Image (tube, rainbow, N blue to C red; front, top):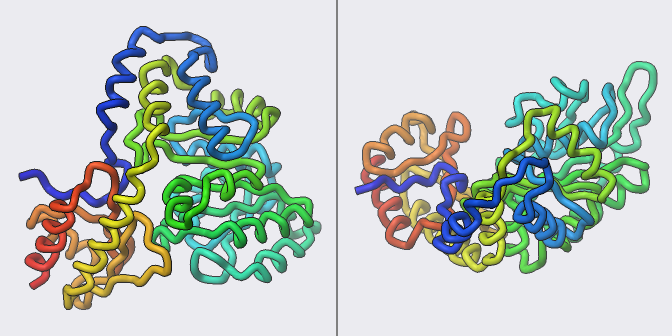
Length: 343
C-alpha cells in the first residue's frame, strides 16, 4: 500500500481534465518568451484572479518572489516582512545575493505583527549608516504558523501604511487560494492592493507551471528580462500552460482539503505524544509538537515506518499538509499510523 504523503501540497495531483488539456495542446510549441497562446491565456487568468493588469509565468514561486524584490527595491535598501516569512527563511538569501538587499523580519512573532510594528519600521528613515525601507512583503497564507490566512482588513492596513510612507508592497501569495477560501473572500480582495503578487500553481493544483507573478503592465514588462537573467525563461510552454489554465477553472477542492485538514487535526489531537497547534481559521496545514525526549526528525522516521510521511519543521514541530488527491481514507490511515508509531 502506498504511503500517505503529507509532506507538501507540491504533491497535489493534476486532474483528468488538466491531463486532457495538456494532450490536446501537445502541438502548441512556440519559440517566443510570451508567444504561446495557452501561456497568454494562463497569464491573463492569473491577472484576473489577482486583480492586476498582467502576469508572467515563472518556474518557481521563489523565483517570482526574487524578481519582485529586485524590481521594487534598489540595491542597498531594506525589505521588511513577517517573522519566519518564506522570503527570509526559505529562499537561500536570494534578495541579498542578487539584489544587495537587507531583509528584516519584524520582531513580533506570528503571522500578523501589529500594525503599529509596521508603522514604526516604516518610520525609520534611512541615513548614512542605515538602509532605507523600500519594500514590504506579506506572506498569505503564512507557512511557518501553520497556514494562517491574513484577512482583508489586516492586508489593507499594511498596504495603506506602506503607501503612505512611499514604500512598495509585494504579496507572497503562494497559498493565496487557500487564504481566500478559508476567509470566505476572493483572491482579488486579498491581492489587488499590492504592487505585485506571486502565486503558486503547483501547490494545491498540481499544475506543471509552478508559479506566476502578477502586477501592472509596466512591471511585468520589466520582469520579463529579469526572469530571463535569472534563468527562468520557460519554453515551450503550450501543453503545461494548457493544463495549468484548465486547473484554475476549478477551485472547489479547497473546501474538501480544508475539511480533511480539520479532521486530521482532530485525530492527531487524541495522540498523547503530540500537541496540535490550534488555529483560529484552519486551512490545509496541521502543525503538531512532539513530546520530549523524542524530536521531530525521529518522530517522522517512526511515522515513515508506518506508511505516513510528514515534514520536520524544526526540533519539535512537524508539519502535515493536505492537498487535492488526498481522501478521507488517507486521513484515517495517517491518524492511525501516528498513533501506532508513537505508542
